[in-house]
Image 1: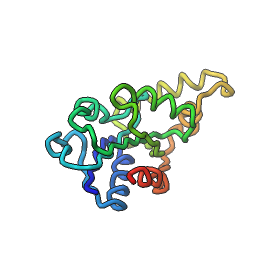
Image 2: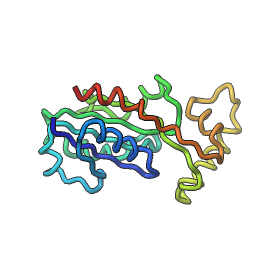
Image 3: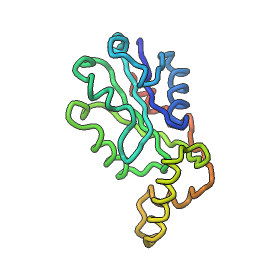
Image 4: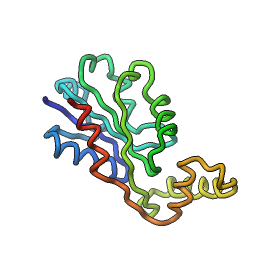
Length: 173
């Protein structure tokens, strides 16, 4: 099967997953912002990966914009986030992102990395403010992502793991 992986990676974790999927499948890969629909529609399978930012999947707008032209293609989406996988949280993210014409597209979660030193100034300051706000709450009421944010603090951690691509590879068929 001829396939392509589109990815939008701000800090490298999504690109790492795109590279691993490419190694396993032989699919081409390209950053979503460099992708042209005329090229993408020539492939039978399209995998789109993007980081999670404010519960939105980066790069998903490409699919939304071109879904009519990609009708009949095998499409899979994965998102990368710093939080540990939690079923109900992921179901909310999928419901928020994969609706309307995207509702039948399988979506997967891959754990990413956290590195405040690599973040741009805006992201770093937003994370610090958010962490301060979360720390004011009762820890017993933390959401899974809030627990991860508090636990990560200013430390760097990389939770990427090639095992996360296994269900994506299986879904390609």
